[in-house]
Image (tube, rainbow, N blue to C red; front, side, top):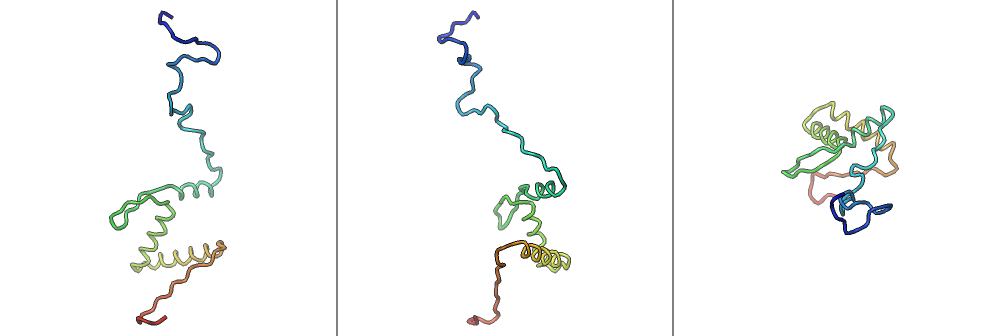
Length: 114
């Protein structure tokens, strides 16, 4: 203790070099999130994971579930029958479990026809 202090150290007055700096958290990583206990929770956690997605030259971060659906839609548009079946199955499952009404889009070949 050869160094001189300009303040007293004691109960409730910790040494300056051991104090947290301004803006620094005492627990930077925070409390650990609970791990899923069953297979369903594990799958849901994996599907919520964020992945990078590039469309029209722009990068976006989307969930893995959304990336999988986009992949099936793209493959279905290119004629993949299994992807068409999967998209229709998913649409049916989500429409049964959703309280919102599905959106219907009408396409017309002739201009001016409504």
